[in-house]
Length: 434
Length: 144
Image (cartoon, rainbow over the protein chains, first blue to last red):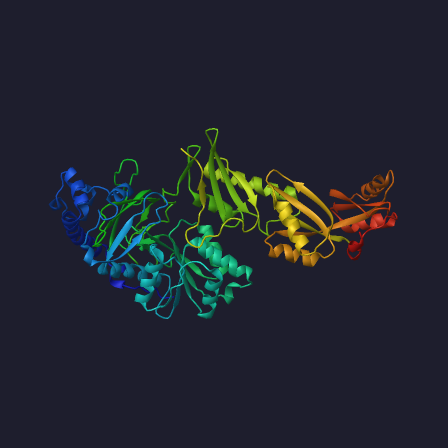
């Protein structure tokens, strides 16, 4: 199939052209922030910087970082970079990891953001011929509106389903012959599981592609969803702080997500020292919005651990690729002193044929962490032979120990007893009171 | 012909058994014999019922995971040495018993029923029958 692009001139632009564009944009953006965001101006002044010190993108490392903590201190208007009368919308983070962040958008910000999601849709094979079902939550969450606006811009028939009511989701997929599904990977897995239970085979399902983001998911989960729905599943990356989904997106290569470098400058840093790492090394991903007006974050620390790759991509895009983050460091648990990412647990479960629906329960008893993983019994797994079930359980415990380095207590629970998520999955229940 | 036993996965926590019996009672489904095996985290309930198809479908609709397993049910005279006799037949036939449980075969009938999960149902049945032991067939389940 011929690769298609939404904005080929920029998506496949030579490297020099992107750098020239970034040089021009960063100078302008630093002036914009200096003049409109007193909080950041002060951070710059503390480092003895003025906008004139930033002459091009190579000077960006001089600028101070913005962390989630800064955003909390600035809540709600402290990072606002445009007059409120020019702002037309807000979105907000869920606030599960602390105080929520409210991001503001001008008309132009929304326009550029929908370019980004339209690029992602085209990279997933969509065109104006497609029916795109957006099953991300609409509202404060960026997922619904983000993909909605991109799909409308691309000319797709856009179905603003929002999340929830899975039977109705399936009815619309069938009745409208939806070809592209956009939602969180955990909800995609749930829709897939439900359709399978209702007797649908992959060739009876009209969907051909899915764009699934907003939470960490494993390769194994991708294969499961692809197989059950008979689609190609693409990852998409974004943060409310930067706009929403579409900061980076996957292409037909399905190996890393192209960062929209004309709008976002990406760096990798050592999370401990803040030192910029050579491109290709694993570290914390830092983004700078090069042209956001209302919420112009410079050097925002995402807490996501990943690495960049500038290897030539088979799709023809020249944007740098960001590998699937190992997990947001916000998702990372420290159990018995060991770093545990839920995505690692998911990988083990799916490799051994368990469903991706699981829950991690961490507690502290007598000053020692307890680490339970609830896994649902499935008809495929169940047998009358207790020995066989416990042997599988032991195999799982040992595979988890190999992956994580610590021992988890695996509890088999009844089918469908772990709540299904229609938005972001609740994978972790941390009961520790520290 | 062996009898169809239903094995059901249950979590090992208070009330799970009662939830299940509630559902069976609500659907007027009768349990003829049962055994419960438990591990630390979960248990398997094994039941013999008259209407296997209906029971399975009710349980599946209620969200249970269950499996049908063939078992052999032998009628044992209610007298000293009765069980010993049956087991020695199985031993001679080199049939391995994985688990077994008993059911009183009805008051005043002077017999007990032993339900056997074995590695070879056909061999077990032929040997028992040849030795004159009566077996319960699927169609007889409602009489036990």
